[in-house]
Length: 345
Image (cartoon, rainbow, N blue to C red; front, side, top):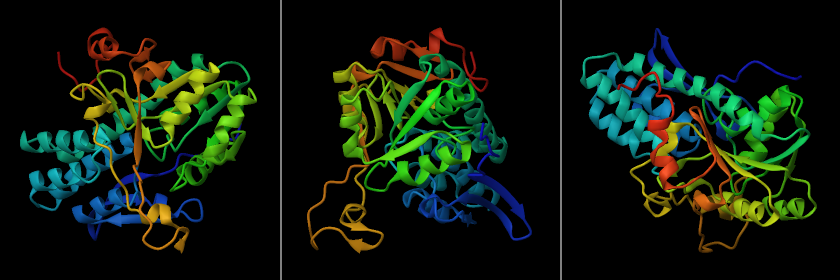
């Protein structure tokens, strides 16, 4: 069925040169697979800001390992945790991963063991999300996805893409429609890269072509990931997700978000409480280093947009499926579903 070995995206390294965090540089994909070796916290932060490492759950893993790296180097661990947590504001996992490993360090526990635990939990969550999400995929399903929510963005096979891979292995997938995802092409560069590795039937399309696919009846299901989910069910994800949700609602197509509970932020009461990162204008005004707009053109380049909960058919987590997406169902998440292994009573 085309299954291949897992991509080694984030790896802790102990070598004669000292401890380091080895990262697959996602900015170089799909042309080449280059490993960045980060031997200090500033280099980890730089990798996060430049999107060499990205995806909410994976940022939580990288943030945790970044704090562990500071501890291993005997540096100011609280300062490192603060710097890592603020490297990208929207993905709540980044701050949580850094803070969790900092807490372990301050309690006298192993920072590295805690970072390893975060990575293991996200991988396990990926398996469970795939299991819970698979029944939502119809036989012969034609799935549309946006950005990248596979192993390059999370543990295991990822979040949204883990469901797609499970559907492929179950013989349910007819087509994966891959939005190119402007302006940095995470769909065309990364999701297509992963789809090819898994042997999935896939087709890349311009973001603006999605509407015609819906109109032609060629989409049975939209499956996306998330960078933060607010208490009312609002979902922050890569910019362009909201328009897909509107299209899906108009055409009666289910719109499913797949994300671990580490991405749910109950302190954010609504989408208005989610900070939206504004990216470098050059991401829009240049293509492959060449000008694509007149010099000095004003640019609006939000990294994310927010989809209101009423447009979300279901949220799939490692704890189960939330079929009625609202403030009550999100707030009750921790009470009505099994706790993670790391949570106390």
